[in-house]
Length: 216
Image 1 (cartoon, rainbow, N blue to C red):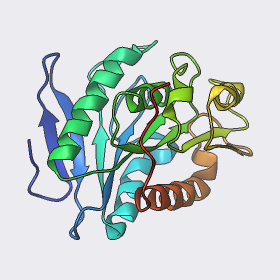
Image 2 (tube, one colour; image 1 turned 180 degrees about the vertical axis):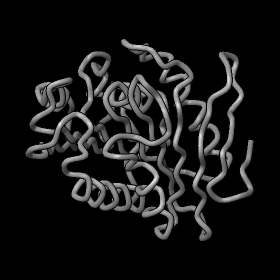
Image 3 (cartoon, one colour; image 1 turned 90 degrees about the horizontal axis):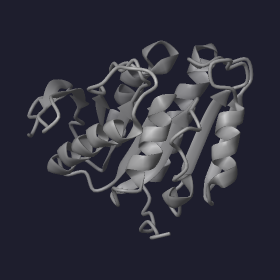
Image 4 (spheres, rainbow, N blue to C red; image 1 turned 135 degrees about the vertical axis):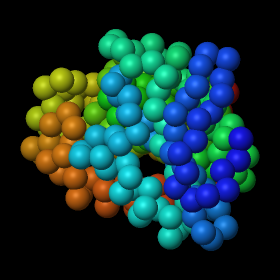
């Protein structure tokens, strides 16, 4: 379905049930898009005191639209394949809006989801994980040659920084790992720094051409 109004609440129909989303559409021509997902508890807000809404607003002047997507299933441990199903439906919506390049961002469980989804979506230009789990992220090497950014808090006791360090180790270049000192699982302790980092990274990666993903 298409959304004619900016910042529209939408529901994507699927064979497994409705997928709740919120779309932020730029007034200027669309030059790229981001798709943002949270953890196993779902929701549209993301970590760090609802950082996703502010991120979407900061990206609009750059011509970058944002789809915030709520997983159909809210249960722990999450099923990565079900999350990927939802993300791929979100990608189809963004294609309808005219997006030719998409950045995926996922927090916690959502980190494994966006890594896996990227291997099935050639229009993905970059993947960003926030305090990702390592379970289900074994396809990280296949994100390359698209850039992968992993962000984790040094004081995360729910999913320790070793999770992102492992994913970074198995991933291929280009890749970057940033550990935020003093930040816990929600990353709220470094919210301002995180927001600036995401805006800078996503704008740069979505405004430059990226090589096509490899097969291996």
